Image (cartoon, rainbow, N blue to C red; front, side, top):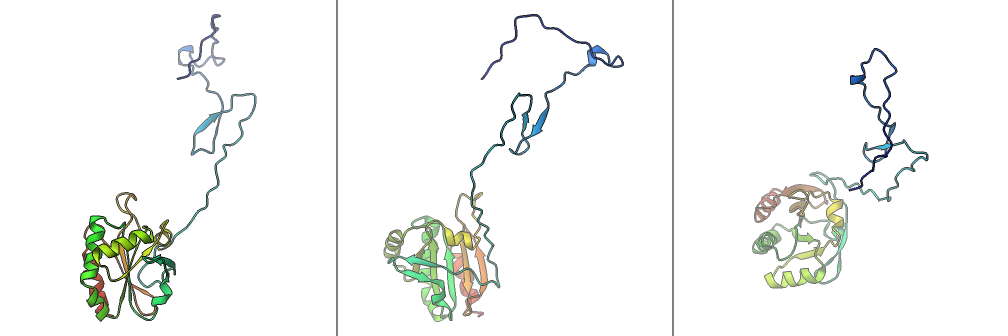
Length: 214
């Protein structure tokens, strides 16, 4: 902590110039201050030279709109578990289930993937494709799909760019990527948005229920 030493010569006190104000109630004046650019913090201007305004690094602002029912979501092209590029437009003309999950090999995500696997024939009967998306790389997806015999496509959204474009909210104050599922109809229009982090198997029930009504 910085300390300031007091001068050794005796201090001189001045009486207030206004006689109507008693000396005991006189208030010492504060140095003039001006507003800084740091969120209302005040910086003293009681100096011989003026302080330059603080400089901040420039950052790019990315505005992402939340994708809702009735919207056509932003398209994408991502690598699957075999390293091949897969575009969302490839599935136009048939219903598509796109489910975003936090990470491979986590308990909830494993339950969800296996639930989609166990009901995969029902999705095929409805004429729908299933796509799982997370931020894991293709090699992680390949090991995950092989271990649990997943018959559907897993896409690698490294950097979570598509997740941000689609406006998927995080959980636990943003520390956990959201678990959100979309159902797109044959025209590529979203007909269902379902979010449930802690009941992963329910994503399968809700999507099948919707597909049966299309």
